Length: 315
Ligand code: AVJ
Image (cartoon, rainbow, N blue to C red; front, side):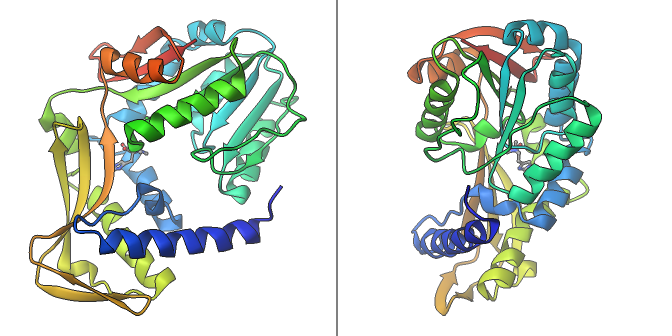
């Protein structure tokens, strides 16, 4: 298992590389994963409680309403692989409905966070076996040989798959297939297409929390890479890209300005943007097609009465 310190070094180098190359492109873009430093994680938590941000509470309600059904779909004596270990109450709902669960394997890049998650769950479910895996599940990743060759299912809540472009999403689903095997299953939370107003309000809330979350990326670049961004001279924008079926977050330059990062100069026109996140929205047909490209069949769909969000069961 790699040491946390090595992972931090590699992460720092990857951040620097992503920022320098992302800011050099004619259409500037930064990968959304860098939004989640400590402050970014705190702001995202705050987002999940906003009245306009429906996905988290809708998904939690679907899991709670259909926990027994979902547990039956996953099957007895199974190994649960959770991709990302931040789901908290959602994870507890699934584990709580699976008393025969053999092993819980959270997979996350943040080692300290993983240990916290694992010990919290062991306190909540005494007797639960946990085997955390430190690693980036969006890149090729092998499970430790100690994970038993039992029935397995993947759990990927939060509609985080929406952040991946189609090629990345297919690669991820292929990897889950490899991890769980031909008889394995996957339960995955997906935000559904809906009217553009509702979508844009969810990503541009009236209290400005999402704006702070987005602008925090500039502060992170300043702090970790010695950048000279003035966050007051950029503004948050949420845009619907109908061709991609995605809500995009951008940071728009409010002036003609130059910024330095790692000794390099970047010139911004007024109105020019940095694209910081795409949050893709699916419907049953488009998700069935995506999953199909990765060798999965959509077997179940659990949704809320307004069909805002879906938990898809893949076989
Ligand atoms: C954590 C990726 C699911 O796309 O809805 C929330 C992130 N960005 N508000 C999403 C996010 C702006 C969120 N995901």
